Image 1 (cartoon, one colour):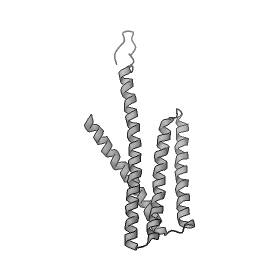
Image 2 (image 1 turned 120 degrees about the vertical axis):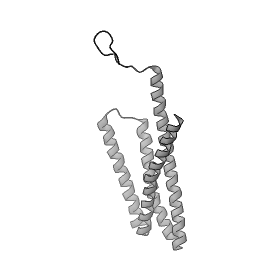
Image 3 (image 1 turned 45 degrees about the horizontal axis):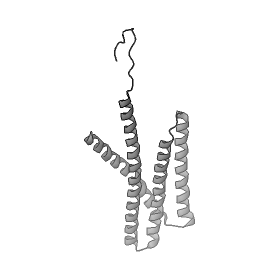
Image 4 (image 1 turned 180 degrees about the vertical axis):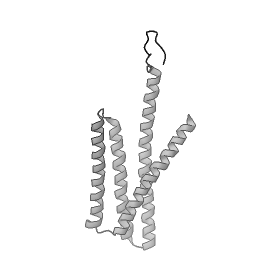
Length: 163
């Protein structure tokens, strides 16, 4: 910033080149977030399938493997809802911060309710083994957290190396 000669401070303005750079960076970030969400859900599915196979091999019981799949499926549902809501929120960015906060609370409550109802169905209606259901769910959630963290770090370090 400099003096404009009239005693005021000259305002910095975005040039068309800077506007294009900002817009393209935001578009790349949105595309990377969608790809990250798909990778995380895919990784959750793979790990849960492997865990169900291990449960079947260890217990020699398809009921335990199906229970692990049920708990892991609830976790995958949670991750898929998170990814879906994140992509929907990116399509319609709210101008009002209060509205955005209300939507975040609504989405969190929606995911919580989906998880509680799904786990309730697995445990009360389908009568799956509680240990296997909860184990599959916790494993899926751990994969969700670890994969988002590790893949995000990998993506960010890859972007820094390109620049």
